[in-house]
Length: 171
Image (cartoon, rainbow, N blue to C red; front, top):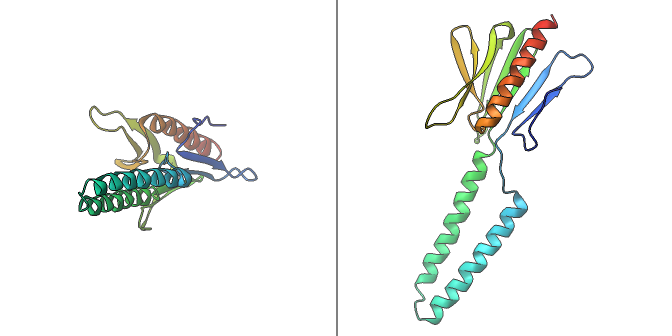
């Protein structure tokens, strides 16, 4: 079985009956769940309300409108951030082919098919930017898991190579 970190950004599943399909799903991690977001926004709104009352008592009532705009801006930015969390990638590995499905925040789907005997995962470390995880096949490369942290990319590359090797040996 494959080792995954405790807070893994990807899930590994295999078809236990036939052992002919391995599925790996990659999804971005969001540290703030819905309940945490609700508590954060309630606390932020309460703070802005107290601040608004302070400015109103000092006679600076026009500031209240700008504080209201600030609440709307914070809400909008969190919504944009959560939409980007809807990105995910799914990798299906079979004996003959590997299918990669990339789905972005708007629901657009991009599919790739690669023949499994010619595929290898590699993690390229780069200075100053995030590491990159590639699936190498023939003379081409396909980047996957752009949203994963560097330590997860290395672990995922090892897992993918193990899966590719297992499927090659199963033929």
